[in-house]
Length: 115
Image (cartoon, one colour):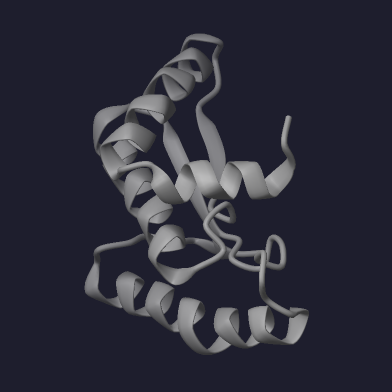
């Protein structure tokens, strides 16, 4: 419980290592259940730094768990606390999206979808 703002705060405060340690057992359970492909979305950062952190964790997980991960950037999941919808939209379009595209171009990220 606690809603998206609770999850956003926890995600922002977590390290990449901590997020990866939470993700790997979940992916391994899916794999043991017969799942071969999973879509993983960002969207619980609501700022560029945390969205990119989440997407980098997915890249690390790809190297550690033999499951196909389809990575989705979902930076417009919600309006961040303290922002207006217009400010949040502008940040996603002018800041976050550009950084995701740059990460894809450099090879740091492999984001397949934008939602």
